[in-house]
Image (cartoon, rainbow, N blue to C red; front, side, top):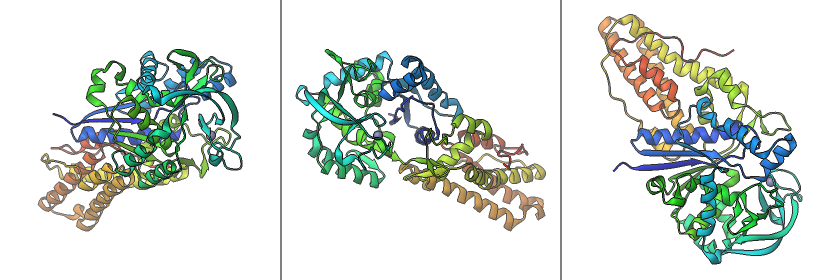
Length: 471
Ligand SMILES: [Zn+2]
């Protein structure tokens, strides 16, 4: 039987249009999904939009439009990343869909009765995070992520008995039964668990939720906490609520790809919820860092939000994919700047890859030889790196192979060779270029296809440059 592989992105809030930060996450996820398809696995790739957050309500109020209208508009923009970034996702779930609402409520009901209880509570709530913060989370009385004072909220909520799962969670993560990559993130999660876990508020009053969100089953005056609801998307999209075919085939998730700001939700709350509901647990969580733009945190007020659609329109899809995968450290934070983007584009795409293909194609055309088909393989180094989500390392290996080819050309000076010798050198180069394009498929699918077509043989001809130089 074919091995199955289920991978997800986190579902972004749709209070604004997508920016470069989520583009990183979804391009990384797409690369892993394509890589596993490439290995012959039966892959299911899910993304979607988180529409029940209070942030969405506030954004709609600011714009003076209905919440539904705002989430429809922005969710559609996120969906359009599919074409812009050449994404291969299989499904896009919106948390305002009926299937999700039913599923999230079913998950609530499936949790052990003794794990959910009601109590009066007073706490500090950050709407930006959609989370209650404790005093020890605050820096100078402010949310460290959003730099604003959280609201004091006092109300009666439902709570999830997270404290009960503390030892179990610690063991789950220490033993790698739930793997968290990279190790620094795993250590952060463990440190957080060892501080002691408090029970988690999992509902809001209808009033505070502005009537927006999924009602608690049997208590319509309470709305399910947006994180409890959002996390459920990973199973509701598979029709867990009806024990559907997709669920039976693909669950548990092989990889959840998430940003470092939401590790706690995915590595602590989510497994505890699933355990309580008697549902098998995901296997791996890959945590990426954040992108700054020109050295600054991305923020609307700074006006440095980069629109991925603009970038793609100007420079094409694969150069953007390349930058995100190669220039942003897979395990850490990275920066996007137009200047750096242009440097990388010219050095690695126009000169490196593009120039190599153009040079060799031209020599092949001149030699008027026929080139036999060759069999390409995935480089073991690329495989090893991708198994660890080290996109940058994988691409840097491919680019090493590109410079090996360049060196061969410089050394052999094929333009000075006799026909027979020329053919031998070109055959070697063509084989290597095919191998390079084969390995680029998960990263730069469109480019890989173009090169593959151009050097397929038996006659190889010059074509227009893959990456025209940028000024
Ligand atoms: Zn916050």
